[in-house]
Image (tube, rainbow, N blue to C red; front, side, top):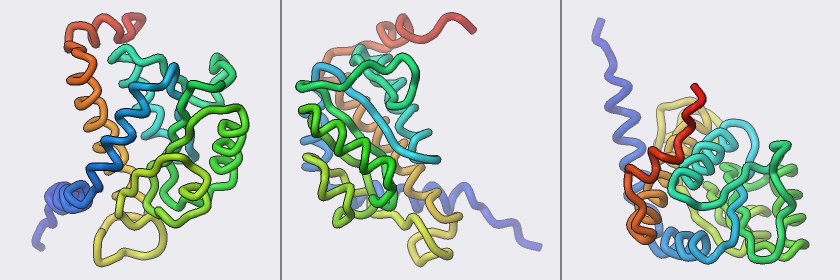
Length: 183
């Protein structure tokens, strides 16, 4: 029996998707993060997990960041930025969160696989990650539905962090100093 090298398959799928990102969309999001007083993130399911990781890295580089739904998250306001992660772009709770943030004067952004979705239409800024999120195995991915999108969101988030580190002059030592020391 021949062993399948799934790690190579997955890394190639990620590379293919990330190689097709719109760099202007990413640059616009970087500028919005830099201009924001505070950054909030939201999402549902595994997309939320990726956004939580992004919020942690934002905190590590010195950006005031919060995860919507946490008990210590303050009220969002004018001058803040909400970034949602939503593969489908249709998640009702995420859409309601975006609408509530916009009503309070915050800017809104979404990282999604569907640039023509309801959530994308409700946001000020858009980053499209062209990866399948539902249905059976596609011609783009052999992975379970949503996995490629979620992996790419994490890669996109880390690429944004590297760009922000460069723009802010953040060092690894500064990041280490902000890393939790309670474990």
